[in-house]
Length: 256
Image: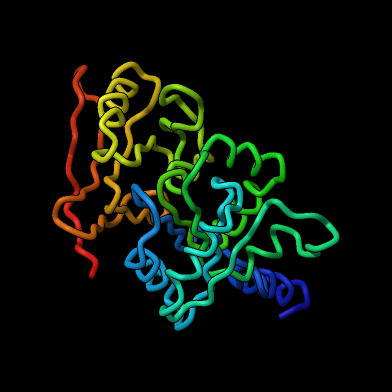
């Protein structure tokens, strides 16, 4: 066999071998876990389990509450008796004190959990600081995204928020999930009818709603499992069909 044939065989063989160290993003399972209200210890435990790590690193983003110290203290208290490593990523920082980029803070984490508060202000800050890009990058690499209230709404294409004066209004999210979303679905009486109206009028697309103590796990952009803390809190798939709203309650696993 001459050298030309050897070379052709060599090219055929290496074409089937993946590049060393190359990550195929199509093979990474991308997870987002959302819940309708504030953080609960059962939800944090569930997120920790989703990582598959013995002692996962969980990073809390209190941006929506303006890095409120009481909110941060509560985060550490919730994590106190859990087998996790809790972290906090603040946005009210200065270059003298923080030497790591947002990317460098987020990359080592196993999950990112976003707190509640003002959704509109949070997303505006994230975009100004390019935190949205860092979040997208680590999500694509397999870091779990999670959160409730503003921390759930942010992952969707859009929904309604109390971030402006006087009444609920529309807000655009980061669109990691290609649906609309409504947190506090049954807790705050104005949420549900307005969500229905916005879907019927085309201001929002079909989407998912969660009561305060209910949540949904999305895997690779699709709803995979619903969970709840009791029988009274639920999650729903809400959509328009023939000019009417259809509300499908999702069967939930009760977390203990």
